[in-house]
Amino acid sequence: MDYDITLIAGHREALLERTLESFARDVFPNFPVRRFIANLDPFMGDRAEGDRCEALIRRHFPDALIFRPETPDFASAVIRAWSATTAPRVLHLEDDWLALEPLGPDRIEPLFEPDVGAVTFMCLTKHTRGLAYQTSRRVVKQGRRIVEDTLVNAFSTSPGVFEGNFLREAARRMRPGLDPEKQFFRQINPELEAHALPRRCIFLRGTTRRELIVDIGREARAAQGLVKLYENGASVWRQAEPAPPEAPET
Image (cartoon, rainbow, N blue to C red; front, side, top):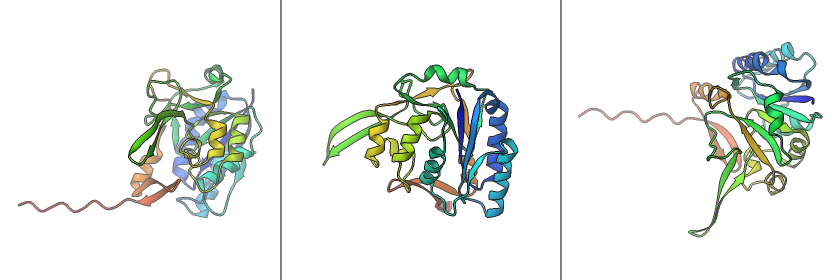
């Protein structure tokens, strides 16, 4: 079974180089790749750095389809890349992750039961709630009274593998300007939720440790004084507030 690979990236050469080297070593050679599709948003780097990022991708995949939009938008990047896929499976990546061990279809394909839309790679920040699949807690209030407190199926745009038709229909329903991951389950895109909530996103753990991948983007953002916030349905990056000065000793 063929796989497309999608990559959502900014102009972050150092992170992208580490990500591609990691997956080229432990992941890419194990998959029958039909096409590599990348979106390079003008985010956290200038045009020249974006050119170097494109060159890094073409070093591994000379015939890659690479989108270079003029303005950054996370959801639009995902929509653009996912809509360009054609394969039965899609290995989805972002530019700030490392693989912690070799991985191939033999560990992924057995997890795709009829109600499974994706397999997400386990990382440190994922909460399993003791389940084999990803969920989000949904609390609905009327005034001060809780009228609904339940778990709903959730999907992730961190690295993982999607069933191709499920992913392409999700791209068709996704809305630009909103966080692409949160649109699956945070009650901001009912059309996408109607498609996604009946399906499950299965966790895939490492063989010798819980985590299969590690996030290297958080440290890079912190080094630049950036924090990621969720505002009005979108994820945004802001400069962190400076720490208050220490009170003088008395």
